[in-house]
Amino acid sequence: MSAARVLALTLAATASVCGQQREAYVGPPVRYEADDAHDAVRRIGAAWARGEWMPERDVKLGFLPALLEALDVPISSQTLVFSKTSFQNERIGPLSPRAIYFGDRAYVGFVPGSGVLEVTAVDPEKGAIFYTVEDRGGEAPVVRRDDGACLRCHAFAWTEGWPGHLVRSVFVDGEGLPLQRLGADVVHHDTPYADRWGGWYVTGEHGEMRHRGNVVWPDDAVDPLVPEGGANLVALDGRFDADRYPSPHSDVVALMVLEHQTRAHNLLAWANYEAAILLDRQRGTNAALGREPGHQSDSTRRRLQDLADRILRCFLFRDEPLLPSPVRGTSAFAAEFPSTGRSDSEGRSLRDLDLETRLFRWPVSYVFESDAFAALHPAVRDIVVLRLERVLTGRTGRLAYRHIGDEAREVALALLRSASVLPPGDG
Image 1: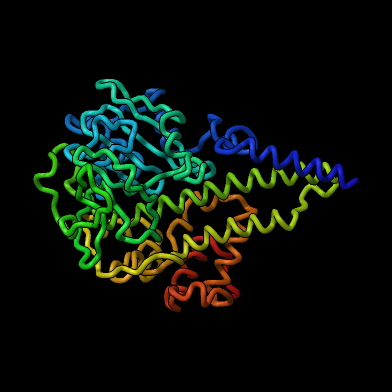
Image 2: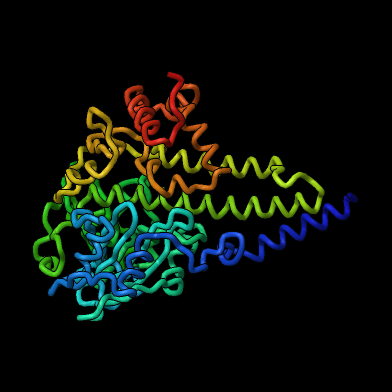
């Protein structure tokens, strides 16, 4: 093939990539918009629509308790955000925060008096799928997929242009309006604690740690310092009417786990999207150049390895800051969360919390054991699994992952092998 022909193919591929921009997930090969998601919310909504069962409606909370139970989402996971960063902004503020609940399969948003629940499902292959659940009183609630209002924020620069879950820390005024000039942060488990939880209520004891939660800023704030008044609050009495919620807590431990889980779920979905597009483009190039269909160029292999490395850095908590002081939550979350995972004969689980110097006792993510990881594109998953085993067996990564001690490596290796995430050992 002539050099001119190769150059033309390269330019065409580049133009295609630039033309996709933010909406690379629309259409083949990703087809995010297709009505073929396989998530729990879709299944529950279909059952309600067919009249197979009618959820119980609570007089005060509507269908929230029934939905949380159906999705295995614990009430103890409740966190409260009062920044106006939702399509229900007119109902949200310091006197009426939005409650967020999460489990392995879904995230649920509740605003008292709204009649609409915001739900983000975790589809094993497509990641975050957005729904609204409409309360119609005596009728079964109506579940609708919403790729409109939700994706304006949840498929933007904050989520690297792909549909994803989002936890933000913003400076807000007394009404809950973000003070845009002061900036904002997307929060993950590796975000410095001083930059977290602006616009959120936070309950718990955390000693020397300081954060942006529980406070508002004056309209003329220029360079606000984190005030002492938001630290180590064990109750939110007098700030809002807690009777309108299932729980009075906005637990600091739940917030920390939420930040890790949203990042982990996003990375798995993004890797699926990018691998699908990358390999689809590779197949086109192979056909044009007369190569074998499964051929991978050096650049394709490097990109797949980069996706795998990003997942591994997150799932092994490589950049997690150490806790300046022990952390204690105020709800039952810290006691309930570990019991929901797989454990070994000694009761050890990847969900075991540390809360003395770090979030988890074994800094190896429990999301490895999820359906979402199992559904990760094989071209990426195979690399992750190979490198993960090498790290946990000590054959590589002793310096990069030195924060994982020998006991943690041994426990995680056994748990991941028993869950079939890693292959069996040599004996």
